[in-house]
Length: 367
Image (tube, rainbow, N blue to C red; front, side, top):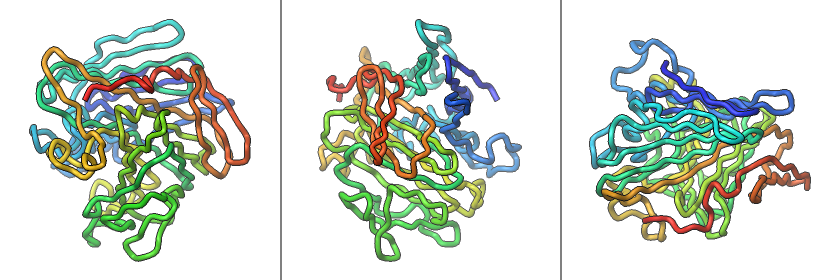
C-alpha cells in the first residue's frame, strides 16, 4: 500500500495515495494513543477474495476521503463517490512549517475539468487534522462531501451543533431483507433528533448509537443558522474518548449520518461491518445529477454544489480530532480563537489547542 505518513507533536496521519483515504490517524494524549477513525475489516485482504465489481474506494475503505461527487457519479462517469475516492493522488508538497507539518496532494485525474488539491495541516500539540480541498478551473458544478468514519466497540452518545431538521431519503439503504436491513422510516422528517420515526413504528433517539441495533441507515441533517462552526461529537463508550468533526456550515451545509452496524449481509460487508458511524459533511444531495437539478434541499435554501469555472478556484475546509473523554453523555463544544472548549453535561469543562480561524467562519463563500 502506497502510504504517506505525516506528523507533528502528539499526532500523525497516514494517507493511502491509491485512493486518497486516510489510512490511520493517531493522537497521543494522557499516555494513550487514540485512534478516532475506522478502517474496514477487509482492507488488505487479497483482491480476489472481494467482489470483482467493488469500487477501489470500497476495497480500501478507511478513515476519511473526499467525495466529488457524493454518491452516484451520474453526470461524468466515475465510480461511487467519484475519482477522488477511488483513484491515485500524488504528493506535491510535504514538509515542516512553523509549529507543525503541511502536506499537499493532487488528484491525478480531473473532475469536471478541475484540478483537485488536498491539503493536510498538523500543528504541534493540537489533537486535530486540519484539511482543505481546492478545486481549480473546470466547468459546470460539483457536489462534494467529506466521509469521515469512526467505529465503536460498545456504542456511544452523539451531540451536534444546532440543526434545522433531520430527513431520510425516499428509500432505505437496504430495502431487501434477503440482503440486509434498515431501521428508520423512509422517507421521514423531524426537528427533534431524539424522536426519529422507525419503520416498525415508534421512534428512536439518533443521538444514542446502540450496538444491538443491527442496521444500515442514512439520514441528512441540515444546519441551523447559528453563526458558529458546525460540529458533531461522538463519545465512544468502550474507547473512553471523544471524536470531533467540525466544518463551516456556509461551505458544507449538511451533515449526513451513515449508521453501519451489521446491516449488510452481502460481501464484502457480510455482517462484519460493526459499530461504524459516518459523519459526512457536504454540499450535496444524493448523487451528482440530483445535486445539480431540482432537489428538496434547494427548496430549503440549501446549496448542493459548487460552481466551477476556468480561472477560478473554490475551496472548503474541515477538521477531525479526538481527546480522552470518560463521561457517559456527549458534550457540547465551543470554538475560541486559539482553543476548543469541551463542555460536559455535568458542568465539567476542558480546553484543547485549536486553530479557531481555520474554518473561516463568517467569511463569504463562492456559490
